[in-house]
Length: 335
Image (cartoon, rainbow, N blue to C red; front, side):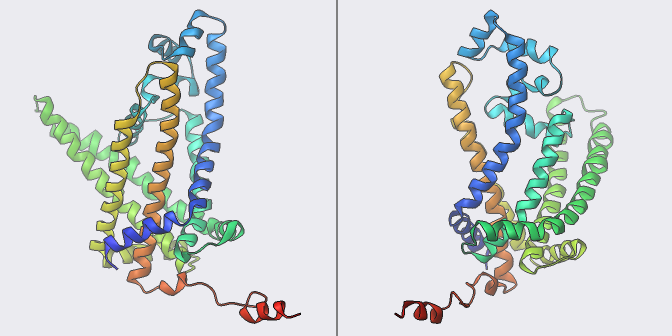
């Protein structure tokens, strides 16, 4: 199977399983809602019945927002103009590539979110691999079966990403970058050097992400119990099909880039209350689109793996069995 064919098949598989998208969107909302309620409570206490409350209710008051963030702590300190609209995407991207620390409450919520993803990942990949409806019970049964396997694989991922962000990132930006820019007096040159280091780090990070994705796929499709076995088999698949795997990954990244570009174009700016509510609605659509892209990654990678290793039989419908076989149906129709 070619990368383009796998990509198209992945799009089809995601479109045929809307329940999966709804499930992960609800999961995302439930994780983020408590954080939003905490910030809302802090805002309410800070505003009270002041005149600033009327201004905040009718639009974005940047002066008040700055004052609130300066005196707040924890989650409240994150309420800045950078969390509004497309600026939030850029802020998160900057914090990610620069390995910027976040408040402990956000870190805790992120850890809980990752655990939830590890739980549903098995059910998602199983649904896309079977390419047929499995029902709610089948979805969560598969999620439960693979959760502890993916949890062990998650420990390997934690070690790998800890190495990347704890040592490789520090080596590139705290050691290599100062050396390369020590005698540079042109800001543009320094920026290009830093951009090149970002690209190098991104390539290493993407390679690790690619291998772990196929480790998950092989763990589900081949019912692997060993985390090390799934990781090594995922690495072998990527190495033997590096051209197809990388090409498919780039197609999925291009889809993600298009999603970001569309959001940057349609996201409303700050202003009136109506524009704020429009921003909330567009933001939720963006979250749905981001989750959809994530699912396309897994579905297309599953399709490529099955197409390359002749695991197409896994997606075939099960053979009819009593009491669901044609013979049972025929007997049921008899008077």
